[in-house]
Image (cartoon, rainbow, N blue to C red; front, side, top):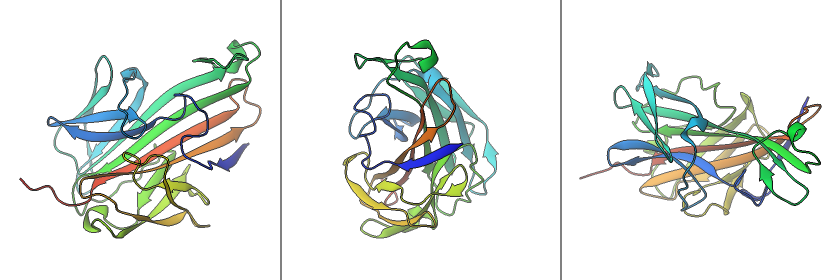
Length: 239
């Protein structure tokens, strides 16, 4: 059985790289790059940890996508320009030793481990207005926009719903501008998993949420850590 425990402050679950980093995508030099970082940080990561990537056209039909695994990050290469893109990263199992060091193993392999977790990170990007969102069951924590985010505009509120394992999640803290203010909470979800999040930027908006779920009778990890982001442009790009 799993027990839900909302995070009080994003990034403070552990003061380590194990869970403090988020995941999102950005368009760079004509490519869709996977970003692993915290706020303005853009850190190197093992591209092998990308566990899946999914692209869709405006009607919600899947587009084949290749994950280019580079030396220090990953690049997503859909067969044609997507309307929607989702990506997942499995950060693996981590255990903390009595002297506060983190090891990339389950606690069954770390004698005397005082904390242990397995973290998963997800991101959903919406690129084209009017895009029909498919079922995204592969994203275990999901920020689902309830209107087209590309039509809202900076300074206005975007209604969202947060789903955990496909079900509405209450009391989830949301960060409205993870890229610029990763520790500033905007709002939290109500009993039905809904919230209103202010669209802050004309450019890229990264709305984020993070949760910790306690696990019972798991020999390797005490918790499952989840991070998710929703990204979109606040205004259309003009040359």
